[in-house]
Every structure is written in C-alpha cells, then in structure tokens.
Length: 90
Image (cartoon, rainbow, N blue to C red; front, side, top):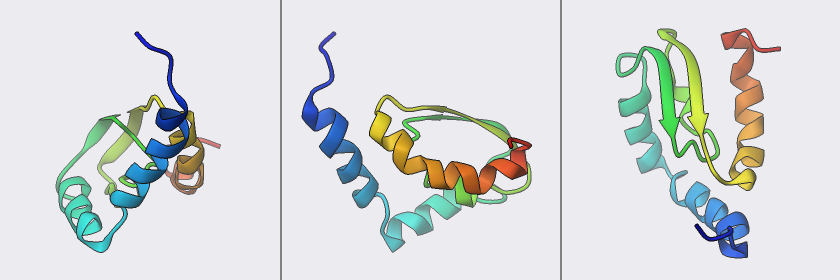
C-alpha cells in the first residue's frame, strides 16, 4: 500500500467535489437519496464532501460514512453541522 500523495490529498477531493456539484448531478442525487429512496441507517462509502446529506428524508435515522481524504472531511463539515441536529448530534 502506497502512502497518499499530494494529488490524492489536495487535488482529487476538490476535483470530485466540483464534478459532483452541478444541477444534473443534484437531480440524480435527489432521486437516489431522496425521501422515498432510502431509510434507516445509511452507509456511505466514498462520502466525499457530504453532498448527499441534504437529500436524505425523515426516514433516514443515521449515516455512517467512509472517506479516506481528510480534505473531503473538512469540506463536508458545514454539511455535517447543518444536518447533525436532526440526528441528535450536538
């Protein structure tokens, strides 16, 4: 296993976030993560910057997220904080 390189840690998370943020992607995200699509405890592998969070309906009881890039977690923090009260996280 190789150590993360500069590209993996600093560039790739930004590129993925940008590529996955357009209106067409948001429409797909709403359809696949929306109110009627998921329920219960959600496991997200490749959490990225947390863009799915805003689309989860009231039947989602929690989210377990896996994301290897620290920068992606940093970019996800505002979204995590915005939704965390719903899941009882202070």
